[in-house]
Length: 234
Image (cartoon, rainbow, N blue to C red):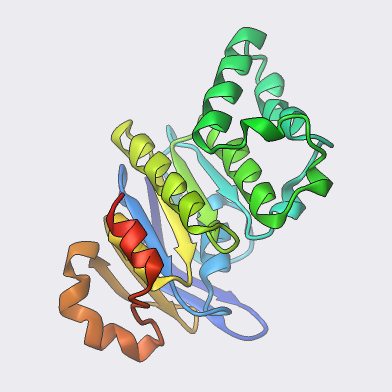
């Protein structure tokens, strides 16, 4: 789908250096790392957001990519939840009845159907994050890139998000989700760990336990708190 070779990008606090990386299709990949390690730059690069770089990126001509940015406020276009969710679908000239059904289904799944008439600027950050997740998932695309979408979600909303991701992976979609929460490895296929602009680990999530000691040197540790219990019960 997307292949990177010898990528170099200079930033103020780090240089992004990716020798070789291929996005694995029809899987959910978790991108872990501390703040400022290069996760956002990496996702923007994959999405085509960044045009100036050294190296090569090869895209499958038949695949499409969508990205949800870290701050959902920066992605708001319209004033209300309902108009925001319908905006892209109307631009694609989708039938109104189909739009109504799509919006109804996804807002019910994410438990925000009661917010449809709400002003986006009056929502909590967590509510706004769920709205922007719905808006992103309503786009008919092959690969979704989500930049720290769980940072303002409570445990139940995090559980709902990953349940939805599981559903679309089964349908053939690809998801890469960045986070600083190590325990989210519990419901993904692959884990990427970044440090100082480089991919330092790329492993199957089922092998995490065998590598925990090695992984802890990057400042990532299992919290063993209530969220782990909830996530394990998905």
